[in-house]
Image (cartoon, rainbow, N blue to C red; front, side, top):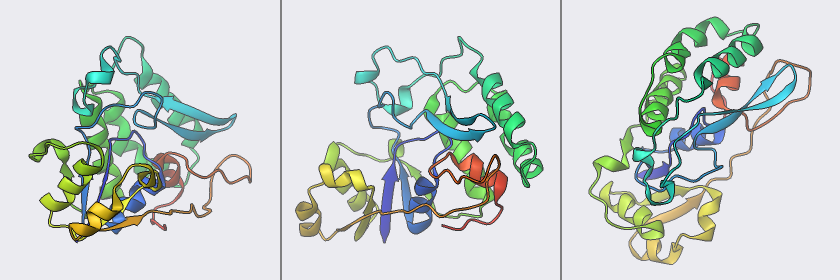
Length: 222
């Protein structure tokens, strides 16, 4: 049983999706602290003028003491219209534009209260689009009491995992020896983006939000 975990992400990159594909169970970490300026609420897309960052504004007051599931989306600016227009203008000539657009329109009209819920429901679109059937479990549905490395180990034990797939940054904080003593082997993801067809000049840009891949490719190749 291989388990992986990651915090919510808006338009996650292919490495996020690859982690889900490789896992028997993926834990959606909605009970960890929100990280300002991370890729939790933003990601990059390719436009006719180069790379643009699309960011979902959040109300960051007291965010240091708030968990992810409590982060409120800020609608004081019309970011939904801006994001949708950016996507429409720059991907309308993409081969799978007409397949993708109807699936994502509601995320630029409906007003979700919480960022975590918004990203979770949006993630389901990409999983269904690419026929990914890995079970997704919200950490908020589990009875967890630890933090940092111990939290990850507690998650693994709750799922009966004997392997844990960590992002490369896990090398900085995971107590691998403790995992081993508890019968859990830690593997570190080393995802290398593969080149795929993109719009706007011949220069391939890796690590964009999943929407760039979906607009240009119907079959998931990782």
